[in-house]
Length: 202
Image (tube, rainbow, N blue to C red):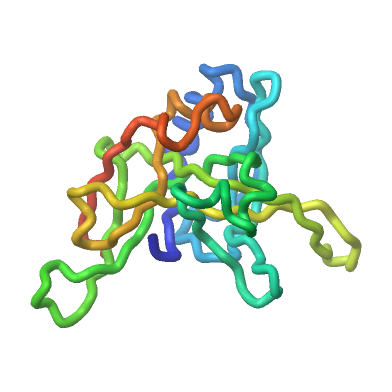
């Protein structure tokens, strides 16, 4: 998965709130831009389920590397739990709501340049990407230490219908699986396949 995705539209945010309300999750309104999202941007994520509630908060996309040089934006579903880097906070699950995500690939093997594609759900009502987050400390405008979060999106091998564009894709779940993922009751292998469609990005 490449390093761009698309923030939710207003309609999708309303739908996400309604979905989470139905499974007894309360959301706290936060302010976030509805636009193309880049690494290190702060966006809304949903964090671990406790007593049928979910925290709805801003978090930075990209986990700072061990040497402080750059961030890691994705974690492989096959290895993140055993990873020396991600393993220490692998239980900190989150969901990243989005309208879709971008990839760059060649439309056919003979193409000379890559094309930007947008991937969305089949009904185009937004997607839920799985991730893991880590508590961190940041400095605010008054240079005071404040608690914050950063996160990485979990990826998996791409579905057959899109693997010709890119070999990997986010781990995307259905809305009704949100509680099982956040609570830790279900693992990566138990998440049902949620297909995406794509079109050339404008």
